[in-house]
Amino acid sequence: MACSPLQAGFGHLAPELDLLLSLDPDGALWGSRTASFVTDRLFTAAQLAVQRGAEAIVVPCNTATVTAIDALRARFEPGVPVIGTVPAVKSAAATGQGIAVWATVRTTASDYQARLIEDFANGRPVARVACPGLAEAIDHGDMAAATDAITDAAERTPQKCDSVVLGCTHYPLVMPEILQSLPTGTTLYDSAEAVARQTLRRLGRAMESHSTMGSIDVVVSGRRGNLPTGAHAYPVGRALAAAGRVPREILVSATTRSPTAAPAI
Image 1 (cartoon, rainbow, N blue to C red):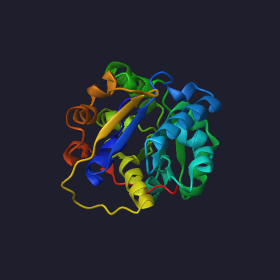
Image 2 (image 1 turned 90 degrees about the horizontal axis):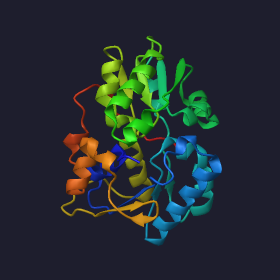
Image 3 (image 1 turned 180 degrees about the vertical axis):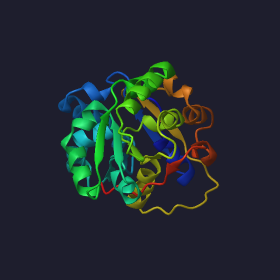
Image 4 (image 1 turned 120 degrees about the horizontal axis):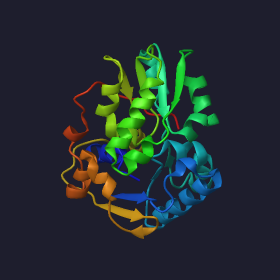
């Protein structure tokens, strides 16, 4: 799994926190896996995190969230808050006229996303655009394959969609390439910072300046390890690997994007 901007969100909102990044290259990618497989892998990772003293469990993956968030909460809450990640449909619907949700094949076909659209799209038309191969290409740092997948998704996105929701936490890593493929004026929405803020709220922590810097530990399919090679293809991944925390300026894209409201999950 490539590094997600969500980890960077914690880096500038709460730099004093220790982070445990649990990656699963042995089981990746989860989009083509069965629900029971995804749930089992999540339970194993979450149990390890709790044993190591985690105060909260964040599921930084839309596919994993729509598949197993209810089971995780039933197991670990209320003792340990479980925060999921879902496409920022609500934020897009607040301003956009036509909305497209780019996501993995599994998330696109999920009942969870269908309910999300029904509950939060405010009656606006929503095009569900599956992006086969895009998460896999990003995960491996294969920009040529990512570009091909982006081009394909853009061609299937209706021209009337002025708002595109990035429904996979991998996709913001190639936000400039996605914007280049879409009509000028298109706004992209992702939920990385919103999920980080929601987590801090659930923990009862204020977002304020700190002089101390927390640590980052990486667990790779249950083993202590390092960020995967694919993460180094992106500024966020390189910054995490080099410094352990990501300056805010790395996260601020020169292209058009929208702030997102905290997801109600």
